[in-house]
Length: 196
Image (cartoon, rainbow, N blue to C red; front, side):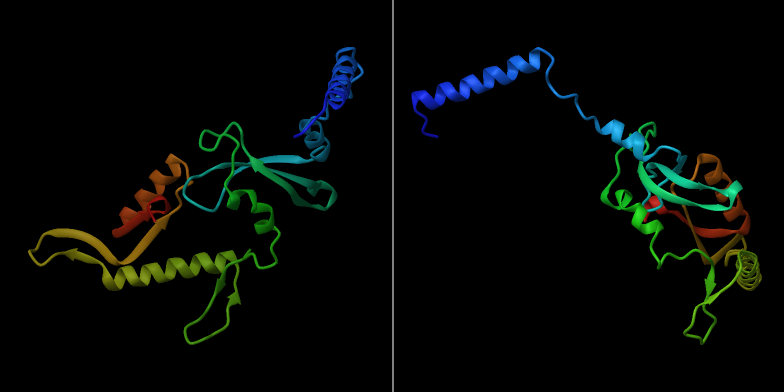
């Protein structure tokens, strides 16, 4: 930049005057983003949860408005990372940061559906029907394919025709119970989302 002596003194004088006014307390008050955040999230209900996308298990804080006691449905208006969570310490990846769009998507599946054999249409069923159907099909397959002894006559008690994939964001207690249920059924194919 080419500057002559007169221009240099003008710039220096303006800078000196501005910094002097700020030092005397005439500077505008700083606008903190924290103040805007609290205003936006006033009167919301805070709920902690875990991100559903991958096996990392990042912590989320979801803010919703509404009151079930007054027949006003809860509506999630903001999602951010949980700063107290030991996994992500308040940060979120791009997928986690876009969870609000995922929640409000018209294509989001909210109920169990089934496609019967030979059909090309998905049919909505109740949660009770879905659980009953899963139990019935697992029982039928276990009765048909359960192996008690191998070719050498050793007791193996296993079922190799069904596999189970567990959620990686579950707690240790939920993982322990899942492992016990799966092994009691005799399943060999058992894995966790964290390894997929």
